[in-house]
Image 1 (tube, rainbow, N blue to C red):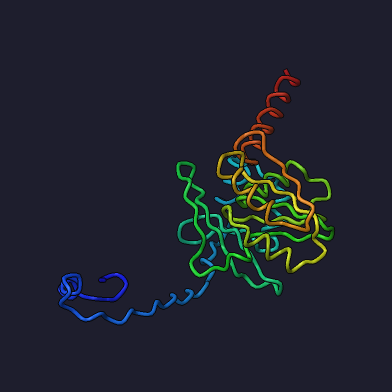
Image 2: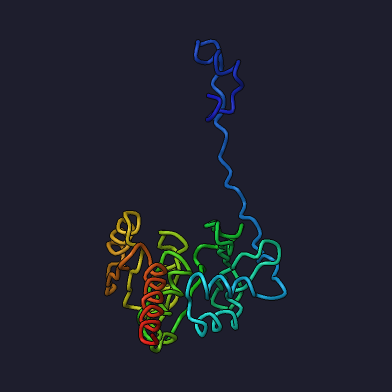
Length: 233
């Protein structure tokens, strides 16, 4: 009674005892979407570059491409890395933030952002790769740099297929979908759900060797560094 009919405690008790009058249910009002604004930019991106290049092993040329197009930057207040998603007119509509502090794994979407426009890149051919996070997307590109700009990529920023479905609806030439979600239970369940929903598309599944594509990339870089050290010695 209190939850669905906005009754007071006394009114709810009276009604349950048969001594009250049924109240009119209160109409649920959807909360208005909060206005979306990008976090203020820092004057430089030293922490972002150090974090993504040294800790995450992202290829510098790949990182340079996205920072040049203002799709990755460092926020002024907390020095988080911000991954920007834009609409078809190039206007920012989404921002995914991740801490650059080595001891933290904090990440969140900016308030008011639209999930349809999560961090992405659209190329010229008909294939799109879908990932759970922007860092996994950048990691995969770093491991497979050959003509990468010709392909399309989208970071779901989770396991919802909203951003993927929007890109497919907006770009009708995208007919081949490669699902590259995490190698864990949540990733496997989401992969099956999304693949089943993509009727009419050619769907391929790629699974990282470890939990996610960044773990694969860092393991690869460590192997390459070890091999180089052995060669030099």
